[in-house]
Amino acid sequence: MPVMSAPLVIELMPESPAALAGVAVGDSVISLNGQQPRDVIEWQRLVDEPELELEIDRGGLVLTIDVQKRPGEPLGVDVDAALFDRVRTCDNHCDFCFIYQLPRGMRRTLYLKDDDYRLSFLYGNFTTLTRFTEADLERVITERLSPLYVSIHATDPEVRSMMLRNKRGAMSLRWLEAILEADIEVHGQIVCCPGMNDGAVLEQTLVGILDRYPTLASVAVVPLGISRYSPSDNMREHTVAEARAVVDIVARWQEIYATTLGRRLVFAADEYYLRAELPFPDAATYDDTDLHEDGIGMAQTFAREFRGEVTEATGTASGFFAWVEGAPPEGYRAPRQTPVTIGTKPERKASDVLAGAPIGVLTGTLGAMVLKPLIDEAAPTTPTRVIPVANDFFGGNVGVTGLMVGADLQRVLAEEPEGHRYLLPDVCLSNARFLDGLTVDDLPRPVEVISTDGLALRKALGL
Image (cartoon, rainbow, N blue to C red; front, side):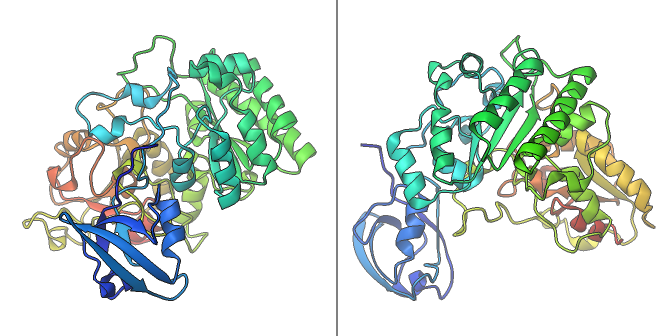
């Protein structure tokens, strides 16, 4: 039997059914109607009932609390974790896994390497299916856990097994066929590693997808990310020529898929176009597929938002490792953090930021390549500059904005003038902390944290 922990109440909505019945922050929920939930998926199903009997542990005192509510009415409780049994950890040993490339001394939760289909459903984590079972398949189908996100990497069994460094990797995609046959929405991903699964192997993989997995909702081809802490000598970043070759292969197969399936299906990450020094595809070529979690189509979407061509932001990824910081509110894919407006130290107030002061937009080195042309084109009346933040913390080829950390921002901002406005995208924060554990209060200049979308930046710049 898996080790179970009781969900801990960390937030209670005032006047909610739970609050009115006497539930309190700090209570551990032993059972709901006699059942101990394994995860927030079961929790949500159980709390939808109009009559609930909660067995509560309150400081060692076991209580029974009856809750009456309307069917489907929220219970009004947030709990401390997404899973109450053990996370299904990953038993692959991929050289390209970013968990292996983390420096020492970060928060313990960041080093947990999961391969859990439930976290795939809850947060969009990718699973290789190497630890998937018949019981898991039955639950996915019965409870309609959709969408799921699956790491494909290669359809050739030997190549996939070699990449995952796991013999089960050769056959685990049989679960993908079974999941798709049950009409579950699945998004696939190919992390493309130079000399390993690019070139002819990538072509073969895209053939295999057309042959065996044509009902996939999408396939994202993303580049290998390498930090300076990578333990592998086999991993390297793409050359410009290699990045262009990947873009060409994807473009050719988009035409093949469009002809045979009526949709493009496969897409290359925005980073490929930046690395290949090529323009982004037209926004219409993304087939209205939301692949922002894979860094696909974000640049074009951001540009449309920033130019005011759309009135609502489509949302962006919630940040690397976002799931480990705690369970989401009811509604699994809710925002992961509350944006911070200004540093919260007493001496830092919104009034300290002068109206009309020059503006610096903080972003990763790859983000700067997208933002600078847009801001130059908009020509804001307030002097505005893009401030690229080189990622010395991770090093390597890491340049995405979501992996910016407090230490690098400290270094960059220390060289910037006082009295300016500094805008920081919230994608690099989770629960108001950077990945290195620092907060905005640790920065040498006050910053305004804004949503990571073009509309928010447009508004902050007064356009």
